[in-house]
Amino acid sequence: MTADVGAQLRKGVVEYCVLGLLSREPMYGWQLSETLTAAGMIASIGTLYPVLGRLREKGFVTSFDEASDAGPVRKYYRLTAAGVERLDAFRQQWAPFQHTVQHLIEGNPVHD
Image (cartoon, rainbow, N blue to C red):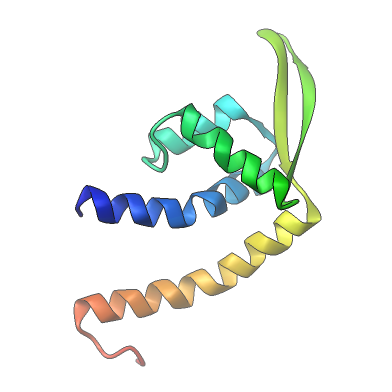
């Protein structure tokens, strides 16, 4: 996969990946960044904060501060009810979309 294609694919789904991670548990920015960076979804923590800002503006995530035993107060992020709905809608559309793309790029009929 060329870098351009990979970057476009990641850009299209990274917000949903963040929602998916937060559906498991509230997480602070560094946790999210480490997970997404390790998976190759973002380049650095600097890439994450604009994504979190957009998700907050849209009402899909909210944040809260919590004391940390390992240092300063951490800002945690969690899904809102609207974020849960948004993630559920994406999950319902993702499998059929992925299936269609897979068949099209392999040259198979779309309807099995």
